Length: 396
Ligand code: BEZ
Image (cartoon, rainbow, N blue to C red):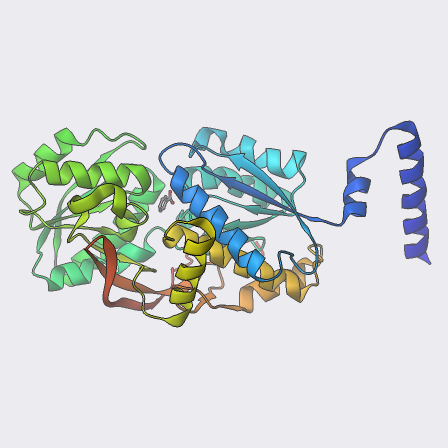
């Protein structure tokens, strides 16, 4: 009875509003019944290609399941966040307050993510993080409505130190873009390398997105470490590897890194990337049927080779498909929606993974080497790596 009265009064309000030309956005939305999905990703700047790959992956996963979420059509919204942290809150608010999205998918850059995170925690909107690894989002500031399908910044580098030491590397220099992603990647590297027996002789860095590496490369040459380990991604990674080779360091001091260094950039980098060693939760050459199918379908659909960012976008789409199917498209049924998203297994091109209690993937890390323009898997560097989730109290 109450429901019927509500429907009737809404209907009456709609007629009244329509006749006066004042269509209330909420009523129009209720009538259209489309689920509103917003992308907040970089489409310009140093990480532009990463944003495009993520969006492609999301769309592909949803298209494969009929192009709907829980039986509902989708209305898409997009904001270019430019990897600019100072605009993070404003851009996320635009999607949440102005566009009234039901789901916000974003973003790539850890600093920008903190802006989205503030808006997600305050508004309660469902946020899927398809890349940014900032620890806080799934540690002390974890939230029931925030799910990450990628990694924490220290996850790949926690697998990096031991294989380096096992190759006879005892003294290493670390170099990175100085912001949360690079600094937290360093934590993983420092902990794993020193635990294995190695020494970090120097930490070097420059502000994101600067790419003037010359002075730092000169310093590396004078330090003469056994190897260099680093965090760079996207367009700056291309410039770094090319400058490293041009400075004559490539054949003298082996280059290692968090695997983002060689993702999506091998064509642009060319021979300067050959032989670079990395650890990551994905590799082009992963020899499992799910990866072969995915790579073929992605290349056919987008005329591009997929990379880890496309995989993370694809898994974000898969997670949404699974969650929304469980509640038949009712995003308001948060308890059941979040439960389905927490407990599902994601059948990913990277290998199957599950969600930790803090909402971050538990996943294998692969040791890779660039060979003939491809990230070749050498083996599993660390099995089922879970982030500590330190300080996460989900219902606090
Ligand atoms: C980050 O800012 O969290 C990030 C950006 C690119 C690749 C990996 C991590």
